[in-house]
Amino acid sequence: MVDEKKYFDELQKIIGQTKSADRINERWNEVLNRLDELSIEYARELGQETGTTYDKPDGKGTIQNFGLDEFPPGRLLALTLILARWVGWHSIPKGMQTHPLSAFHLIQNAFTNGVNDYVEYRKTEVAK
Image (cartoon, rainbow, N blue to C red; front, side, top):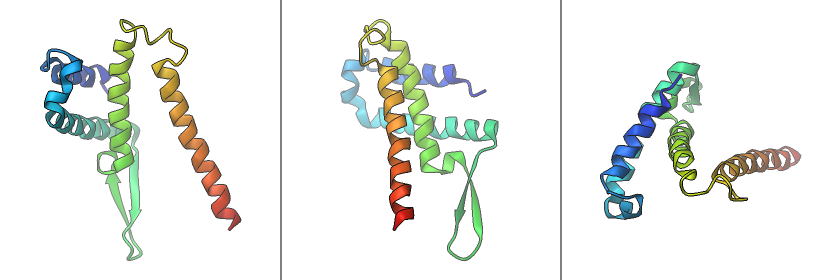
């Protein structure tokens, strides 16, 4: 299992250096660079744990195999998982878990909407 707590703690260190998440804008580029590094590490671990790779045709008839950390959707998934854990942690003291539009519900709906949009897209592509 990927040690999500490790990545949560690293994010806390980044945010904590601002003394408050409200002041994150003061160091936005630094925070984003560190989050990028963490997403690469997380995606690498996730890929090793699951055996997931990305096969990409090179246009010359062969397929190149990339790790999840080299695949933008894999890195974005890792970033999302890191941030979702952080939001989950902070949702309780901020009262977000009882709000009708809870953070988890919003994350789940966004993912489901993305899946549904792709299914609709494929239907229209196949119908062409």
